[in-house]
Image 1 (tube, rainbow, N blue to C red):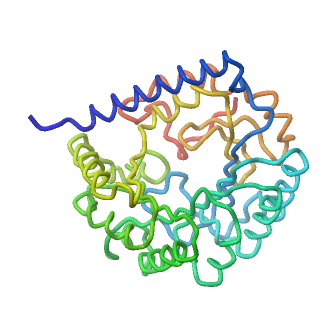
Image 2 (image 1 turned 90 degrees about the vertical axis):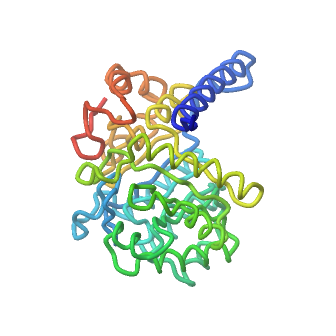
Length: 347
């Protein structure tokens, strides 16, 4: 009988979740792990709605109106970065969008403020705007990794998926420049029915580009995927993906890490395992709980960040509306609301 990889990975994920809960609870009881963080450890800056590609799966539906000015202008992000440093700083900053490199020199101005305070970065880019000059400037910062999205082992599928000619060529060239500069490179690869049979080739490409990791991720029903549901994998296709993950993990052991995204439901449940560590700040100033749940606890342009954090950090994930939302997850699809399509819920 063929292995049911979906069932195996679901069991592994559930066991890992249970172990995490037990471990953290034991550490807290021993006084070795905080029950709450006075300040966030991690913040994600969704720097802009603007994007220079128009990906069919975009989880937050970026690039719809690139002429519209973001409420959080680069100057406001700079002001917020200074505010964070003045209030104790953060350990990690995730920089995303839209496409963060569309900010030009202002991106480096934001990073410099946090870098000088000791912040570590995780930069997420489609790679189109990476060039020798930008990579050289990016190499001064500390990273967990710099993530470049490549969705095909060859150009045809990637360019169709990203709806931008030459986007594959730019991403591949940019990724190689990143690794050559000594920056830890992660390749993010969205697996769909259209590229499922090319996973081995994609892993080989990532390794040849000097990636230390490739994330083989399923597309979730969020943002523009709502208009492109044919990009979602069925159970049989998920089985194939997970089998390829297992095989390539063995093949590249000690050379390159192969990872697969956890289910949306278990990703959310993990937030209930430990004290709240961070938030996402959106281009309109909204302080959102995370990428997978449509909940907002305040707005940076109206509210004091740390006041909201102190008042809501311990209770936001236990809010009845959030709890009800999590209960409705079914096969990673929540039928209550479509994430980044329907209006967010303020709690």
